[in-house]
Length: 263
Image 1 (tube, rainbow, N blue to C red):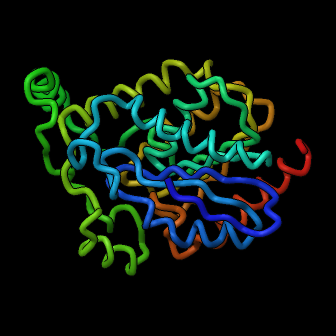
Image 2 (image 1 turned 30 degrees about the vertical axis):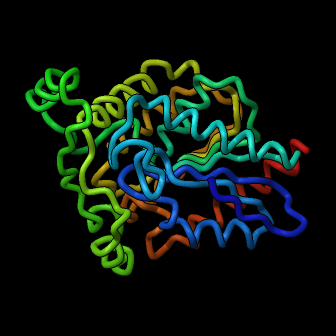
């Protein structure tokens, strides 16, 4: 767990990174949130970055992610300030499952291209093979095949990822199946999503997440205060795109509006 505190904080933002990446890729996001007057609680998810309880790219269960985020949210609540959850991609999926399954109050949720549907997932044959191998070789890892150039138009990030030793290039069979199952549960249990103000920011040119599935999920949640913005020309990683300052302004505007009204 990492904590970035700021003087005279107005709120706390818990940031949840996506698949294959790590918290170090969010330095700019953390800096921006801190500059706007928010404490930031974040970190590496199990099996990613520098948080390797067993094997890089491997988890026993998706629940590990949810429980990790719960420790971050619990830490955020100790400040007795409004608490917001910001999750990108798989971090968005984790945030959704957290809201659906955990009895924890939040002042708002921000979802950045949440992974409730995958654009280029493996075919049924490969999934069947994974299911057969899972009981015997759950930690067997396979290449992700994901290129950073499919996630962002920011050439600086694409170049950094190529040489980043913490960037995941392999994940386990168990990881893949748990990820798929969590996405299915997020859609199946859409009515379990609590009535928490929610802002969804979605890439319009997403090559990793199926934006239509995400938008359909969003339209189904029974939330009194919800809004969505599809950035038509942006790639998957909205907060790494050349236009990321525009995205950050929308996030800050959402936080400011909700924190002032609820506290």
